[in-house]
Image (cartoon, rainbow, N blue to C red; front, side, top):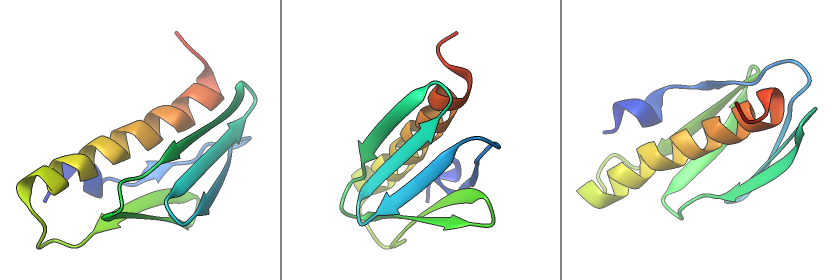
Length: 85
Protein backbone atom coordinates (compact mmCIF):
# COMPACT_ATOMS: atom_id res chain seq x y z
CA UNK A 1 0.00 0.00 0.00
CA UNK A 2 1.15 3.52 -0.72
CA UNK A 3 3.05 5.14 2.13
CA UNK A 4 2.14 8.57 0.81
CA UNK A 5 -1.56 7.70 0.68
CA UNK A 6 -1.72 6.68 4.34
CA UNK A 7 -0.46 10.02 5.66
CA UNK A 8 -3.31 12.24 6.93
CA UNK A 9 -3.63 15.77 5.56
CA UNK A 10 -3.81 18.46 8.24
CA UNK A 11 -6.43 21.14 7.57
CA UNK A 12 -5.15 24.54 8.75
CA UNK A 13 -7.35 27.15 10.42
CA UNK A 14 -9.35 29.15 7.90
CA UNK A 15 -9.67 26.26 5.44
CA UNK A 16 -12.95 24.39 5.00
CA UNK A 17 -13.11 20.90 3.50
CA UNK A 18 -16.36 19.41 2.20
CA UNK A 19 -16.42 15.77 1.07
CA UNK A 20 -19.35 14.39 -0.89
CA UNK A 21 -18.96 10.89 -2.38
CA UNK A 22 -15.86 11.16 -4.63
CA UNK A 23 -15.79 14.98 -4.73
CA UNK A 24 -13.49 16.91 -2.37
CA UNK A 25 -14.05 20.68 -2.19
CA UNK A 26 -11.63 22.93 -0.34
CA UNK A 27 -12.25 26.60 0.41
CA UNK A 28 -9.80 29.02 2.00
CA UNK A 29 -8.52 32.59 1.97
CA UNK A 30 -6.93 32.17 -1.48
CA UNK A 31 -9.92 30.67 -3.26
CA UNK A 32 -11.87 27.49 -3.75
CA UNK A 33 -10.80 24.28 -5.52
CA UNK A 34 -12.20 20.81 -6.06
CA UNK A 35 -10.91 17.37 -7.00
CA UNK A 36 -12.73 14.21 -8.06
CA UNK A 37 -11.15 11.13 -6.51
CA UNK A 38 -10.76 7.80 -8.34
CA UNK A 39 -13.61 5.36 -7.59
CA UNK A 40 -11.46 3.07 -5.40
CA UNK A 41 -10.35 5.88 -3.05
CA UNK A 42 -12.50 7.11 -0.15
CA UNK A 43 -11.99 10.32 1.82
CA UNK A 44 -13.11 11.23 5.33
CA UNK A 45 -12.68 14.26 7.56
CA UNK A 46 -11.53 13.14 11.04
CA UNK A 47 -10.41 15.47 13.83
CA UNK A 48 -9.35 18.28 11.53
CA UNK A 49 -7.52 15.99 9.09
CA UNK A 50 -8.45 14.52 5.73
CA UNK A 51 -7.82 10.78 5.71
CA UNK A 52 -7.87 8.78 2.48
CA UNK A 53 -8.43 5.03 2.41
CA UNK A 54 -8.83 2.20 -0.08
CA UNK A 55 -9.23 -1.57 -0.27
CA UNK A 56 -5.72 -3.04 0.26
CA UNK A 57 -6.34 -5.90 -2.19
CA UNK A 58 -6.47 -3.78 -5.33
CA UNK A 59 -4.07 -3.84 -8.26
CA UNK A 60 -0.71 -2.08 -8.20
CA UNK A 61 -1.88 0.72 -10.52
CA UNK A 62 -4.79 1.42 -8.16
CA UNK A 63 -2.38 1.71 -5.25
CA UNK A 64 -0.40 4.27 -7.25
CA UNK A 65 -3.60 6.27 -7.81
CA UNK A 66 -4.17 6.19 -4.04
CA UNK A 67 -0.89 8.04 -3.40
CA UNK A 68 -1.53 10.42 -6.27
CA UNK A 69 -5.03 11.24 -4.98
CA UNK A 70 -3.62 12.01 -1.52
CA UNK A 71 -0.95 14.29 -3.00
CA UNK A 72 -3.52 16.15 -5.11
CA UNK A 73 -5.83 16.75 -2.12
CA UNK A 74 -2.84 17.94 -0.06
CA UNK A 75 -1.98 20.37 -2.88
CA UNK A 76 -5.57 21.68 -2.85
CA UNK A 77 -5.36 22.39 0.87
CA UNK A 78 -1.97 24.08 0.53
CA UNK A 79 -3.12 26.09 -2.51
CA UNK A 80 -6.18 27.62 -0.87
CA UNK A 81 -4.28 28.29 2.36
CA UNK A 82 -0.91 29.64 1.15
CA UNK A 83 -1.51 30.33 -2.52
CA UNK A 84 1.04 29.81 -5.27
CA UNK A 85 4.69 30.32 -4.31
